[in-house]
Every structure is written in structure tokens, then in C-alpha cells.
Image (cartoon, helix red, strand yellow):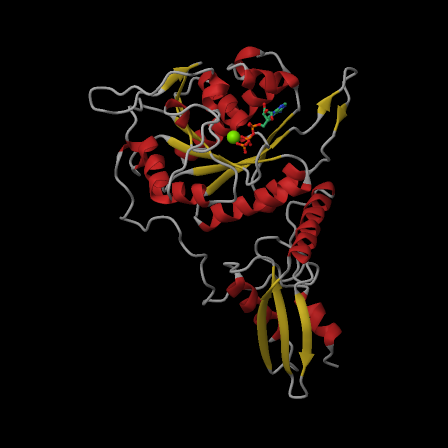
Length: 396
Ligand SMILES: Nc1ncnc2c1ncn2[C@@H]1O[C@H](COP(=O)(O)OP(=O)(O)OP(=O)(O)O)[C@@H](O)[C@H]1O
Ligand SMILES: [Mg+2]
């Protein structure tokens, strides 16, 4: 008999394309009504408003339900979860990703016929520049060989700037030519991290000469204003400033340009995706759930902009006790769960070490000030992984 239970069982085979979990398990299915004619009407609560993949979910629901010969018609009504429901859904997805990992599974997909992609499935909106419209200038041009990597987290204070500085030095130690743009216009910190204080100088072509410290080239708002000094840019000025960091700097030839992004889930990252089509992204999170949720949103924005996410770095992962035990003071698993969600590698887990903070405060990234520390080894390992991945990609 066609009843709610049968409809729900069928819907267990529809997966949220981003969370890789059944829409039933995620509690997205509501108000299933079966009319005597065999018409099934139901509500689907999306996790995020304007979820770009809503059309795919609608198509997949239609596809699985219409396989039931007693269902004559399907009506899907879309709504959006409230904050609490969304939290629960994300929690469920993270738990499941972790469980899957513990069981050694490689995918959260079930053992059932996957829903087919219907021909009218809508693509996520393209936010980056359209082909042929890309900016053609210097560092931003498609022809430029420099690998541009944004370091993003969504949440503030998780260690983006620390990671940017140390990865830059580590990549340089591995033989690469590396630059950094401190794109945190309001909360710039790279000058302090590198101990660079000089004000901006320009060359004969009126291009800004980047600071050159510990083998790395660097530009930051710190070249123009003092740290802590309030800066108020109106939107267009902010965009212009960001653009100038790419185009009006006397950049030498670089293999990597790392971009220290401000906290927030996306507008600056999106702006960069528009300006530099080939920009890639590394997501930073701490092991706590809340940081992971926010980083997930940042990653989502990147995906919509068709930016490649290279991998996830988990920071402040553990404290190493004197007898060698690891203590997970901020919980555990956030980095791996996030990496699993985006199906990208967890590039490394950086311990919480006072030497990391001291290095940042004293103008010498830990990779320089304490190269034998555990964190320095982890930074070098992450840099080597990124370099390896990029070189493999370049080799095709
Ligand atoms: N692994 C670590 N061990 C110890 N301290 C760390 C570690 N990572 C970062 N910190 C410290 O945590 C603080 C925040 O780090 P950082 O400024 O790099 O974060 P952020 O994500 O760039 O912050 P914001 O969002 O404000 O730009 C700094 O004082 C830094 O020295
Ligand atoms: Mg920062």
C-alpha cells in the first residue's frame, strides 16, 4: 500500500549533493501528503537559502518517487531550515563523515542505485568572470604561471595569517619563489608576522616595491597605515585596493602567491575568484564544530565560484604533553570531517604551540625562529604536499 513509510523509504535514496547524506537522515523531508489519486506532495527544507543545488534535489526526488507505479504525480515545495535545524543537519553530516572514515569507507554514498542526473539539472551559478572576459593584467591574467592560493576560514582567529606566513616561508625553503598579499585590509597582520615596518616605496614605473623578508615577497596595508589605525574604505575603494595589490606591485616572477584572506564567509574570496579566475583555496579550521561549520560555508562559496579547494588544514589540533601524549583541548575531527565533506585531502594538523605564537609576535614565523619545533615540521610537510599536488597537476 502506498503510504508515508513507503515514500520515506524511497526518499532515503535521495542525497543532498553537498552534505552527501540522505535527505531523510538530514530531516529535510516534511509534510508528506498522499492524495487518493496517487499524487504525492511534500516539502523539502534546504539547508541554505538559495542553495544552488535545489534543482538537483527536486529532480532526484521526482526521479525516485516516479519509479513507484502507484505514484501518479509529485509536487515538491522548497523551504529553508532555521538556524537550529541547519546546525543539526550539519552535525549529522559531520558525524556520518567521521563514522564512515572510522569504518574505512571512502564515500558516504549508500549501496543503492544512485539517482540519475536529469538533463535539466541546473548548474551552480557561475560567479567568476565568463570565458574571454578575464582580466588580462600581470598577476591576474590567465597566462600568468603563478599559482594563486587563498587561505580562508570563515571564522576569525583560527590561524589564517600564521599559516599563510609559515607556508610561504616553507615553500621558499623547498625552492619556490613565493609572494604574499595580505588581503585583510582592516585587520592586516603580515607586517607584524614578518617584522616588516617600512612604509611603501615605489619604483620608477610607480609600482609598489614589495617587502622582501625571510625569502618571501610581501604587500600589506601595513605599508600605508599603522596597525590599529582605523581605516574606512568605501566598497569601491576597497575593491580598487585589492586590485592594486595584484596589478600595481613590482612583483618578481613567482611560483606561488598566497593570499591571506580576512575572516568572513566569502565576499573578498569571491572578489578574488572574479579577478583571478585560476585562484585556488585552502580551508583552515580548528577542530571545534563551530569553526568547521563556518569553514564549510566559506568552502561552499568557493565551490559556487568554481574555485578549486586544494585541501583543509586543521590548526590548534592538539597540545603535545611532555610525556608525548596528544591532548585534544579543542575537540577533534573537525578538519578531517571538513575534508571529507569536500572530498579533498586533510593537508595537515598543526599543534597548539607557544613557539608558533611567539614567532608571529616577534616577526619571525616559527619555521624561521624554531625550525626544529613540531609545528615547523608540520608546516614543511604541508608545503611539500601542496607543492607536490600543484606540480602533479601541472604535469597533467
Ligand atoms: N598553532 C598555533 N599555536 C599557537 N598559537 C597559534 C597557532 N596558530 C595561531 N596562533 C595564534 O593565534 C592567534 C590568531 O592567529 P592568526 O592571527 O593567524 O589567525 P587569523 O585566522 O589570521 O585571525 P584573523 O581572522 O583575526 O585574521 C595569533 O595570536 C597566533 O599567534
Ligand atoms: Mg589574519
